[in-house]
Image: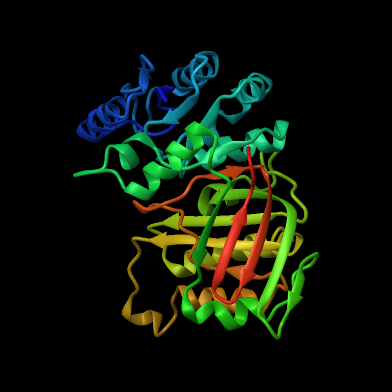
Length: 319
């Protein structure tokens, strides 16, 4: 089914023009109408245009009437312009059927929209790293994106990494039904929210950080050493954010390098340490992050979570 997809650049400047062109060609080959914002390839310092230019691009996307507003890439820049976004117009566009899709720096936009309006946006690919991947986009990512377009995607399932089974299952979650004997629990009707850990943490203490209690928080990051990941998780811990959630889902944390003086300190060390400080269960290996194979997740949607051993099922129904 042909859909109208609007491509715009609210964050970093597009550096990989070949990936940009491949992404557009791929979406067109799938039969979609692709509309490119006039400033999508604008460059100002490291940004896709100055602040006013990128704000205007967001609002053109909102006014486009497209089925999907898809960012060209992440990078950095959205936190600078959050005060200038017309959130009521964004929420109205969502109400009228528009899906705002993106990843990484787009976490700032998504959580600001959630905090200001409660509207649902989608954590998923960007044009360049997703559809512009060479030689071909990831099949699972494409299938999940197509499910969104067709209104068919209603959830995702995955298996946790093996060494997380015991710790994740042996901690009781507030509001969750937990059986230690069978290593199963379920959570119903909880708001799914989160995104990139670095960007999300930068919103703490601002009007753009959602005040979610009893939610399902998902997190991912790229090129951040485990000690930096721990430092940000510690900020969420000390601010009480983690303890207020019913579950924390850790996605993919990639492209970092351990050092000789880490002496065994690694990502698993961080997870184990964090689990000792909260009763909220921490689940791993969510197929989302700066990786080719990723699902699309509705930020702000009421969702159900079911866990049986290492197997996890996240269901949000028809959004």
